[in-house]
Length: 348
Length: 126
Image (cartoon, rainbow over all chains, first blue to last red; front, side, top):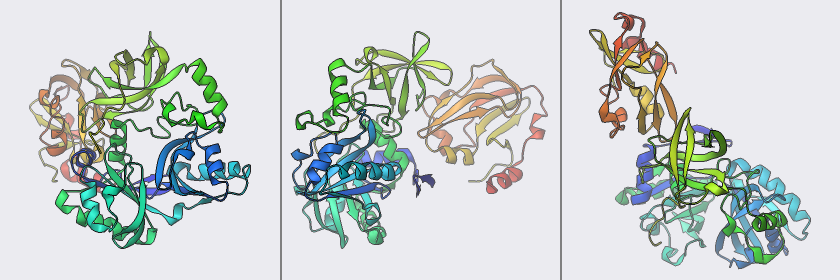
């Protein structure tokens, strides 16, 4: 167990590689109850979300979710988040545990300027259990009357899971098909146990923070505090697709538009090591003997069996195929820029 | 897992198996458990001379990197070639998987290290 944003979290149950491979080939279950939930509701809820989010929430139907940046006026990240449209004038944003208090304070402040809308920190009302992997649906289906096949990717529905009132979302942080189940905390252990029992025939296993990190990295999903933070813009992070340019103004819009027109001087890139070495967070990207960038995430991935990572590099070094040098504890090691994501599943 | 009586241990969780003036060096079961899945072992060049306690290699797991310290002074005479393709044996057979063979500068060097009972006491206290 490690302390993590005020929670005691397991890094691993049976080994990171074992857990990682289970999710890629069968199924795994994660307790991600540490994630924060902030609800935004009221007559002007849509206008409030449009103000704080980089993405265009008007595109969301009720029952649909989208990934977005919670932006600063500089176009950087207060946090990244999933925005759920629960009802026409009721949204829920799911934020990182370490950022929940900061994000809630920020959102509360911003929505005041909109009026006729309230933000509520509902984090204590939800436990969150993620069932991920190609067998996720077959594991979960016997536990619920909701027809899971009818829930499309980045859609969600309501129902019962193991007799607990649940919001069932077809989302995840692994790059695999799967579901995230929001349930009341007092029944979370029952749901967890029911998933483990139902998953026995599919060889589902419990997974910790370690596998969550290696899985999300293979899928090139950004991690706040590593790949994105208040110093990196949405465009530098390669997340321009989360910007709803057509919706008009939002916090940070002007700075991002300016950066879009002028171009960014650095960008987040994926790399694979050429030399036998593992580049990790904080290692310097070198060129001509001086530091020109920094590794934000890196590991040896259990499924692809390669040393991969992401790094901010000068835009001129960003093209796929470019060779870069990384200072691995004093030894300069070669890496090659590759297309992101490193891994993507076939079909849903 | 039991800690074999024929090994000598360090507080940094390395072990040494001495025969004559040559010692095999590896890491303990406790160390591999702390590290998790080992994916890469970086070893020194043959011929390198090291002092006791000097970092002379690194062991990388999925989640972290840690240094390998020389349990005693000596010269590296061999590195285990099998680790290049099968670093996971550090996890599965920690006390049989040697990483380097050292020719000891002082053939009595093992005397200053912990025996298995003392080592087990050390890790049970941590």
